[in-house]
Image 1 (cartoon, rainbow, N blue to C red):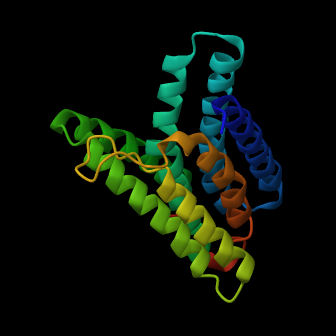
Image 2: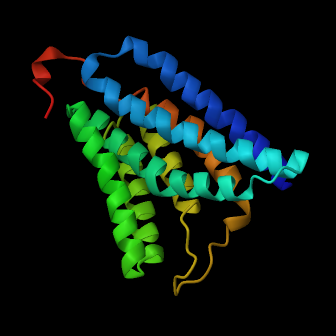
Amino acid sequence: MPELFQSILLTLTALLSAVWIGAARRGYGEPDQPALFCALLAFSLSAGTGACAVARQGFGLDTLEAERWLLQATLLLGLPLVGVVALTLSRQWVWSRPTWGRVVIGLCAFFELARQLGWSSEYAFALGLTSAALVFYAGILQWPARLQAFAGAAGGMLMLALMPLTGMTIGPNPLAAYEQLSLALACPIIALLLLNLPGNLREENGAPV
C-alpha cells in the first residue's frame, strides 16, 4: 500500500478522533476531563505524525526528523496514555490532574532512564505490550457489551501490530511497512472504545486521588 495513502489516512482518522474526543469532553464531568485530555494528546500526536509524513511524501518538505520524533512520542507516550485512560475509565477510577501529570512525567522519565541504560528496545517492547493489554482488558471488562469488547480487542491487536521490535532478538516487525495504516485504523476504534466506557460521572465515586 502506498506510503502517502497511509499517511493521509492516518492524518484524517487521528484528527477526526481528536476532534471527536474534544467535542465529547463537554458532556463529561470534571473527574474525566484529565483522562480525556490525555487521550486527546495521544490522537494529536498521531495526527501530527501523519501530517509530517504527508508533507514529506506529498510535497517534498524536510519533515523526516519531526515525523520520527512524533512517531516515537506516539508510541512511547501517546499509546501508553491511551492504555491508562482506558483502564481508569473502565474501572471508574477517579484520578486528579496532578496524578495524570505524574503519569506523563513518569513515562518521560522511564524512557530517558531506559535510554541511558541501553534498554530502549526492551522498554519500548514492554510498554507497547502493556498498552495493548490495557486496551484489550478495558474492552473485555465490559462484556457482554459487544461494542466495547470488540473495540477493545481490535484496538489491542492493532496496537500490537505497531510494536517496535528494532534491536530485539525476535527480529523486525513483519508489519513495519503498515505501521501508519495500523495506527490509522487504531485511532477511531480506540476513540470509540473510550467514549463508550463507564467513566466517572457519578458523584459517589468520591474525590480524585
